[in-house]
Length: 114
Length: 112
Image (cartoon, rainbow over all chains, first blue to last red; front, side, top):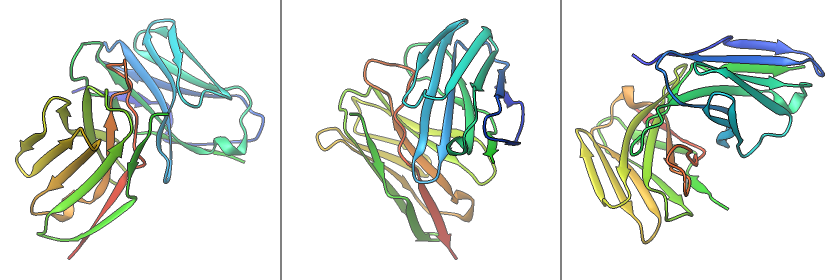
């Protein structure tokens, strides 16, 4: 079974703190994604990585950065957390094949910024 | 820009059919996916359809695609309480095999 794990299920941080969210997948997938999920807005892509050290901005990259030093690990960094970054953060991975590619999701991290 | 629209809620009686609808703006999506998110669980792929098909059936699930109207639907026959979840429509982004455009999700509520 593909497993995508995220470092925390719940996280509470203060405004201005630097926040690290980590994601690890065990299926040797090329692609990894960070989304945020907000009620009524669905999933919005923050960043996408298609290989080690490679990244692409998604729809809402402002206020976030990412790091992919190893194939299995994709980190999301909030440089200076703000209250409007309170959200559910979802990590996903998928193979780099052509055709149908399923995204496999982690359980999510619910981040609250006070 | 690219957009996917879904109703936020659908309420059906147990045993009835559920039909979840989705409209999208970009007709060049190659694959169109349906994902399911159960309470307290991660998202999982439910089914998908290739853009050159107009129907796909998989047990209780039927996916219909109308490319001309850019309309996708998911029909769940004989809806059960275990079908309670949020259902997301997600076509592939144009010129990308990997990135998806996500709808807001439709919460399916089952009435006894």
